[in-house]
Structures are given as C-alpha cells and as structure tokens.
Picture 1 (cartoon, rainbow, N blue to C red):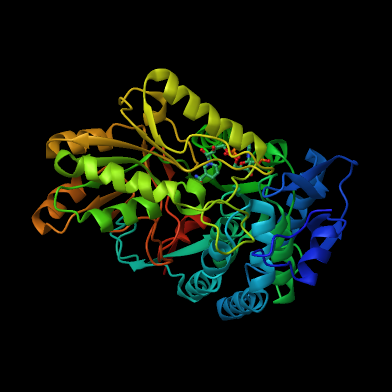
Picture 2 (tube, rainbow, N blue to C red):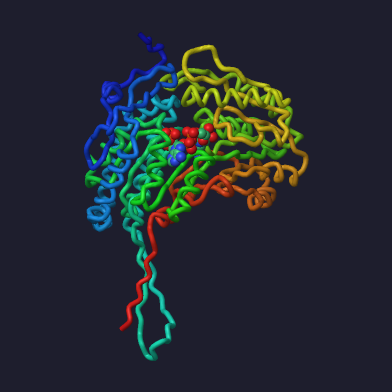
Length: 501
Ligand code: NDP
C-alpha cells in the first residue's frame, strides 16, 4: 500500500469516492457508458500508478454527444433563452465551482501532478472570476445599426442592422497542462454566446471535466447544452470531422492544431486555435539580478514548465550574463522535488511517462549537439514521472533545444550584446505566443515592445493572465484570442438585416 508522506495532504473523502467511480460519458444530462468496452487508464503522476479508468469514446459515442448538443441547440432551450437568464445560470455555475473548490483542486493535482498550491490558487482559484467575467458578456452581445445608400428604387427607405447569432454546436478540445482551467476557456465563451458544446478533455487528464459538467448542470444548465466525451485523439478527430459541429475551439500542440486546420478547411469549419510557444524573455543590463532570476523562475518553471506561455529561452545582456546564470543555477538546484499533494515541494512530476521521456529526449539531444547542462538534466531515481529542473547554456540558435517546445522544467540561457541581436534572437522562431522584457528603462521598453512578435508581451513579469486581457498567438502559435470583451465574437455569426419600408 502507498504510504502518504507526512507532508502530503490527504485527499477529501469526496475526492477518493469520485476517483473510484465507474466513469461514463456525460451526454444529454445523463451518465452513459460508451458503446464499446474500450477504456483508458488514468494515472497519478506522483506515483506512476493507475488510479481509475474512463471511457475511450468511439466515433459512435462522439456522434451521440454531438447529436444531443445539436438537438439542444436547435430547440432554442439555450440559444433563445433570455440573455439575463443564461447569465444567471452561468453565475450560479461560478458559485458551484467556488463551493467545491478544494475537491476540484485535489482531483486536478492527483490527475495532473501539479502542485496543490497551483491547483488551488490558479486552476481552480481563478475559475470563478473567469466564469463571472464571461457570464457578464452574455448580456452585452450587440449588433450595429447603420445608414445605407441603396439607390435601386428611388425614394425607398431602408432600416439596416446586424445581429450576432450563436454559431451552433461547438467542439471544445482541451489539453492536459491546465485541464479544468483551459477547459473553461474553451466552453465558457461558447455557452455565453448561446452555443451548445461537446467538450473532449485530454485523455491523460479527463477527471476534472467530468466533475465540472455535473456542477454546470447543478447550476441549471439545460440538458444537452454541455456534454463531455472522454477519449483519445481519435475522439477529438471525430469531433472535428462531425458535420453537425459548427466550430472547433482548441488548445494544444501546433502539430495537432495544424491537423485540425487541415481537416477543417474541407468544410470551412470555424476554428480558434491556441497553440504552442517557444517564448523568449529578454533581460537588459539594468535588470536587478535577484528580480531577474525570480522572474526567470516564475516564467520558466511554473507548473513544471508545462505552460504554453512559459519563457523557455532566456536572453541576457552580456554585462549580467555570468552572475545571472550562477544565481539561476543555484536557485534551480535548491528546488525541492516532490508530489503535488505536498504543498512544500517546488518541483512536481510532469504529466505522464510519455511526456517525461520526451523531455529527457530533448535534454539528451541538447547534450549531443554540444550544449552544456549547468543545473539538473537528470531523471530523479524515484517512482512517478519526475524530471529535474534544468538550465542549459551554450545552445546555438539552430539546436533543437533552441527551436522546439519542450514543455517541461527546462530553460536555455544565451547572452546578447546589442538590442538588434536580442530582438533577432527573440523573434527567431516559428511561434509567437508570449515574450517578456526585464528592465526599468522606459525608453528601451517602448522601443522593444512593438518589435517583439508575440500575442502578449509582459514587462517585468511573465505568465500573468486576466480574463480582460486577450490571449493568443502570432505565427504558428495560433489563430484567434481567448479572453477579453471580444472573446464571444468567434462563437457567433454576423447576420445583416435590411428592411425596406
Ligand atoms: P495534443 O495537441 O496532441 O493534444 C491536445 C488535445 O487534442 C488533446 O485533447 C488530444 O487528445 C486532442 N487531439 C489529439 N489528436 C487530435 C486530432 N487529430 N484531432 C483532434 N484532437 C486531437 O498535445 P499532446 O498531449 O500530444 O502534447 C504534445 C505537445 O503539445 C506538448 O509536449 C506541448 O509541447 C504541446 N502542448 C501545448 C499546450 C498548450 O497549452 N498550447 C497544451 C498541451 C500540450 P489526446 O490527449 O487524447 O491525444
């Protein structure tokens, strides 16, 4: 039997009983079993042990879920509901999440491996504010009126206006790094806009979505409006290819995002794609070392680096490069490694054995190509999916480690001599999700910001998000923006109305 180390918190009884459930698919407000007996094991990354299983949905299962969502959409039970009533239900959903926060946080940590502190304060702690922000937009969906100059019939008068109408059934495909939080980013604007949804969480982190959908229905969501199918990439593809799905909202890898875009192009399916990042952080010579290293730690190692926005390429002014590398390596070597359920451990397991192997492969290739590992670089000798936090130097810009998204606790550090060189290095990537600049020089800040090709640029911070602040990528980091007052736009069609009178 696994012993719980003294520092670890014990799961709530409700968490243990939830995990042990015979999990099904949530379709049309009821739990249904899959059409076949195919099931996926779900692991606790801290032990490497399977903790439960979920349905591996077939195409037929996805079809059932989409048809339930379509029926609900066409009935108008949600799309034609008064916006204030939709808003009220979504606000009650926020209350439900808040009331069950500790349970959700523990489920997330046990399934994803992340620190319970992050699960409590970010994944779950940030959810009610996000849900309420988007719920508030439900009552602010507007069109425009405008004068036209149509002169076909002399003297005829016209009144013209636009309406925003929900696009239909939305397929929401979520990743494994912030399973519940990003799941909400996918489903909330769709629901607020009046769409109905089929959510497919990642096959490795399905559990919080299965609890979340119950809370949404407890808040009063009508049957069929939000459905959850668990399954692997085939279920995601079945959702993308389903003719009754009108829009896909996706967060995940650039490779899968491109595959979705290719499938979508056949029938001009609407898509929003939030994809990977290989994000730079630039530290100018005036950046105080202590603040710079803290920033690099937060940007690079938060959530074990499994963050699309993470700063994984650090560019440091030559004048402060040596002390920066020394202080960063010392800080990284001083991090304690342990399970996410131990609130004092600073480095937790990565999400899966497969992902750990990928990260270790990146480290091996960096060594082979001639980069130097100055901190970490090994796989700790303990059960669970652990990787030491790692600092790499002397990585040339064409090395794989400088170009590919590692999505783990690893940063490269490179010196630069001039502003031109820093900008050139920072923008030398196919991706463009985020960037940060560390300086107190206002003039330099205003010079750099417009030149960085990224959807978000932070100054003296990294990884900070807010429901009001649009988030998404340049280049291969995606299409569209989550958050902000315009986030509902891509879940609706604009209808022009022209009345002759
Ligand atoms: P994927 O992009 O493959 O997975 C994201 C989601 O898409 C999952 O729900 C996945 O299902 C689903 N999916 C997989 N294949 C298809 C398909 N053909 N059509 C529709 N949906 C599909 O990411 P991975 O889990 O494989 O992670 C690989 C890399 O992606 C990471 O190492 C990291 O670099 C990056 N990543 C980026 C994230 C971000 O926030 N931008 C988040 C997670 C990963 P299933 O899980 O069952 O395969």
